[in-house]
Image 1 (spheres, rainbow, N blue to C red):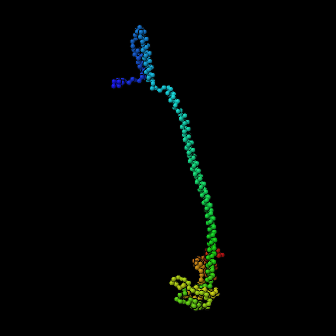
Image 2: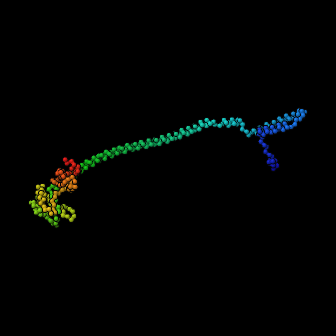
Image 3: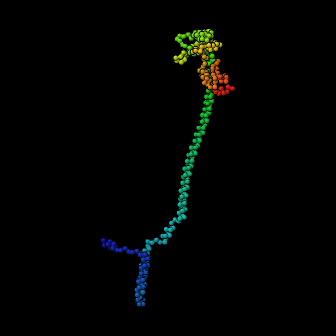
Amino acid sequence: MPGNSDKSSEKPKPVQTVQTLLAAKNGNEKQKKKTPKRPNIEVSMDSSSDLTIELTNFQNDLDIIKDSLEGVVTKTDLDKSLADIVKKSDLETVVTSIVTKLLDSFKKEINEKISEKSNKQTKAIENLTKENEELREQIAGQRKKMSEIQKQVADNEIISKEALQMSNYNQQYSRKFNIKIMNYPENKDEKIRDIFVKDIVKDKLNVKVDSSEIQAIHRIPGKIGEARPVIVKLVNSEVKYRIMRAKKNLPKKETVRLVDDVTKHNMGLITRLRNCKELESAWYFNCSVYGKTFDEKRIKFDIFDDINNKIAKRH
């Protein structure tokens, strides 16, 4: 289009600044100085027209300056902008205030959490203290029961020992008139009473005993392959002592032996006494067990005695 071609052909108008205007003005003045002076008549005739031209040029210069200053920041704008700028001291105050508020909020949150945790711990400690007290009461109760049980056990032990001692003594007393015959040959359909009266007492011991003085006689269980021991129950201790005193008359090569009928507990006690290095010998006599030290001290022992302690306290 023609209109467009014209506009495109137009050159952009140069921007006029104060410096360019002043430079142009100085150039004009220099040109004026170089122009040769005209006669006075010419000067007077042209003075009015020159003044008009100068005024017109000055007006044009002002318009150009005004146009060039349209995009320049004014003092009012600068004052307004400076008024909006925060001072450094004010900025520090604002930052300090914000940081202080943040710290206060942080402290408050921490304190709340610490308080909450402390309350939980306090409650837990209270619960543990309560449980501890309950456990202490239970332990105290158990200790009391344990003490009572221990006392009862000790009492039962004493009672048991006394009962066992009494039982052992009664068993031994019931065997007071008994004689045990060891290693006597066993035969089928043997008449053990007649054998004892004639073969053992009369022939081997040279003692006269009537069959009526024997309350009972029988064999008891023994080791397999060996002759079972014979138990003879006599009517009184006098008959027993008469026979036992004569057992020394048995020949040395004789295998038959006559011994007292001793309980199992007393036999165990005699064995322990014979194994004691502090004693020279140990034996049974009249329902009791005795031991003799190397210094000829005779001591009576019971089945529950501490042998070494009793020997140490013999004096």
